[in-house]
Image (cartoon, rainbow, N blue to C red; front, side):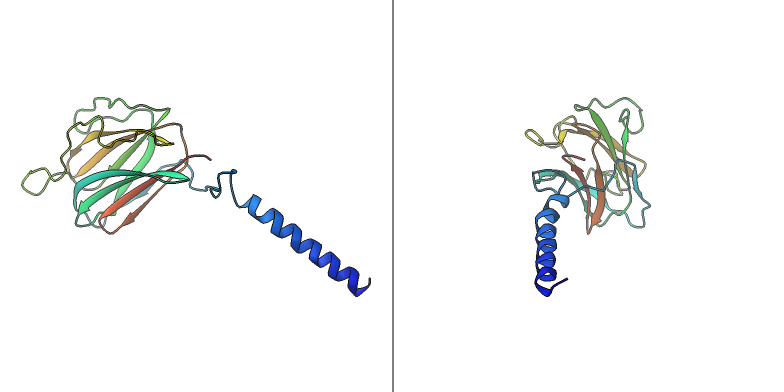
Length: 178
């Protein structure tokens, strides 16, 4: 095989890789990367606990994000899809909009050592306004009991999610697509 032919074949191979690589790196034409988070439970045993002070949400191009803030730190959580989120202590169902329900439990209370609330909200059924979000449908309070706090997260469908901690925060991201 001539040198010119080898160079031409090499350039053709490089061009094919350059053209195909961006297509295989994304799950859709939206530019979002393929998500490998899965929809199985995510659990981390606590080594440190604080007190829940705030819950907030944000929209991103490829996922919706729920953030739970703490005084001190918290690295213990149990987040999973359930058929029904129930109130801590009573076991009463927490109504949630959406096709699927994520139960978010953090190993920190929403009250201090004297029983005073550290997280206050005006409407337990609508902790955060998620109107217009791609995946989130509702964020509702399920209670704080025996040193842990529970939040119900109504989502559009059973989609992949991830959970991680940052100093003073537990973060739950739910992808817009598989």
